Image (tube, rainbow, N blue to C red; front, side, top):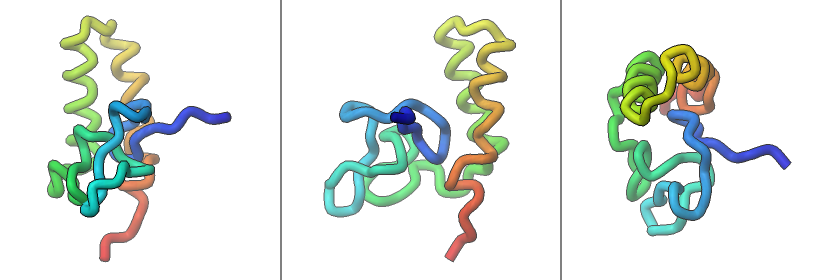
Amino acid sequence: MARQMCQSCGMPLNDKTRGTEADGSPSLKYCNLCYQNGKFTQPNATAADMQRIGYEALRQKHWPGFLAKMAVNGVPKLERWNTPTK
């Protein structure tokens, strides 16, 4: 089975990292850093912003630059960035 990942930043999803919907239920698509109470924590962010944020976070965790860059490379392909806004 494929590993679920946040459709905004790409972080792996599990019971501890899931965001919440407006009714308090766990989000099936987004992590708690990107999505809380049914809303994006950074609603005006772009895919490029999310790549930069993710890259910086991984570098702070001492990931080598080339690995951090590879990890955030797919962010623009995630659902949040490819779904038309309402």
